[in-house]
Length: 318
Image 1 (cartoon, helix red, strand yellow):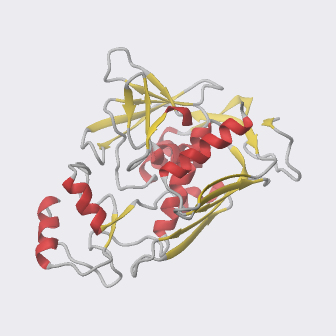
Image 2: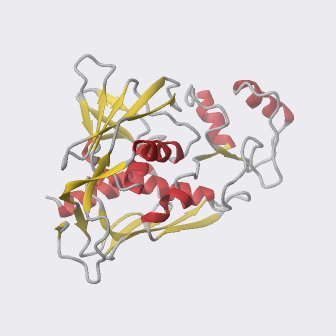
């Protein structure tokens, strides 16, 4: 039987109620989005109740950083974990893949400071999990059951995240950017079985003016126009487009009629909202246990996601 923090929810269906890990090791190689460090991330099987942990194997002492919201030290352009002066950048897509595929226990070796960005989604990490295989362990899953609503708000920015009782883990997301090319979008996931097909492939996105700011700040060193959707919400001169093309070593960059650069095709009309949902899953994984509850997120971001995760953890586990 599963272990619950709280009462067993009414009508709860007992499916995949044991903890899971991987059958064997598997690696993903690539460059980090912001640091451009090319490295290898390796998922290792791990014992029951050990949770999700990162290990920096490029450091002599091989320090371990637990995937715990109390280890979040920055959320500027992604979620960064840190402990004892050691950091790991941009962990959210890796964590979303693990939670979406039902992995409870894994030790993640990484030989650089930042996880590989790949195409800006969780797809490649999901594929790696399939390659390794998933195995049930002889221990009940430690669910965190939501019995009373918990909420986080930033009224100035119009941000709100709320979780309330439900018989499964569900998420509804709304984003609103008040721009011609990307205004209000909605995305939902009411069954984690659909994570792989409906959420995992959805890539991160950025507006052109944000891209230009990131370039000027010497960030996105590992960006190459294949790992993000770029929305263009203003008129852009040919000179600006030529500058972007030169930065990313592309022969030519143009703007499509739908208002995105010609570097990618959208998988879903609401792909940005779906990616924000992916980020919410990844950041809420930092609570440390799989959650049974319904999340409603309005204009979520990494700071609000992790603040919300911290509130959930400290409300229910302390």
